[in-house]
Amino acid sequence: VTVPGFAAGVEIVGVDGDDTLWLCQQYFDDALTRLCALLADDADSAAVEKTLEEVESGNLGMYGYGIKSFTLSMLDVGLRLTGNTLRGRQTRAIIDIGREMLTHPVELLPGAESAVRALAASHRVVLVTKGDLVDQQRKLRASGLREHFEHVEIVAEKDPASYAELLAALECKAEDFLMVGNSAASDVVPVLSLGGWAIHVPHRRTWTRELVPDLAADPRLLTLGALTEVPGVLQGGR
Ligand SMILES: [Mg+2]
Image 1 (cartoon, rainbow, N blue to C red):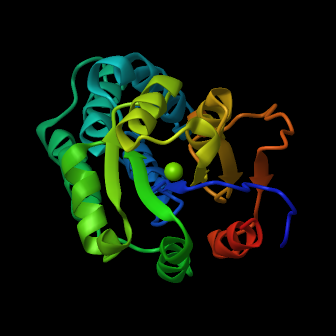
Image 2 (cartoon, rainbow, N blue to C red):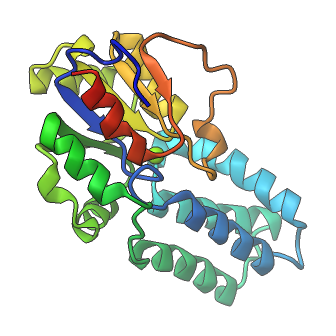
């Protein structure tokens, strides 16, 4: 893919972690399936899913993103759907689901390593990810990709203010910054709003909260089918 003029002059490329470099949402989906099985005597799957969505929405502002927060939300769902009679073994099982998520081996997406390596050869590359600090650091370490990043930023929320702060710290103007990621809400919209560039690489599993159904076309936005296409596009723009 060659797009003349796209991202011309971009100096720093931000890359998202979860479901851009390594699998993530799949483990949350699998956890939900297990939670549904655990609570099958008390509620059907649709009710578990709906309650989890409600509980998570209420908890995000307090607990933030990530697996620890998700585990607390699963416990809360269990208590709500059992009328606060969740059993000890169910509580144990929910905590264990969270612990297994936190120790799951990191699975890189196909071509992630070569794509990041290629990007780092032509641009300054930074990792911009959100969620549990400890878990994100663990995943980055296990990914083997750390050496390719000039800087790593783990934020509580990927909003315009967080990106603006990062760009100020990097002494980079928004028009010289491009973000690559699977989430329209976290990786695309806030960066475009600052005047930066974005490459959206949708992943087949993306949390509904990260979807933007009416994502508008923008000359500073490109949607690609795979991360492996990104280096070619950015080198074409140089
Ligand atoms: Mg992501």
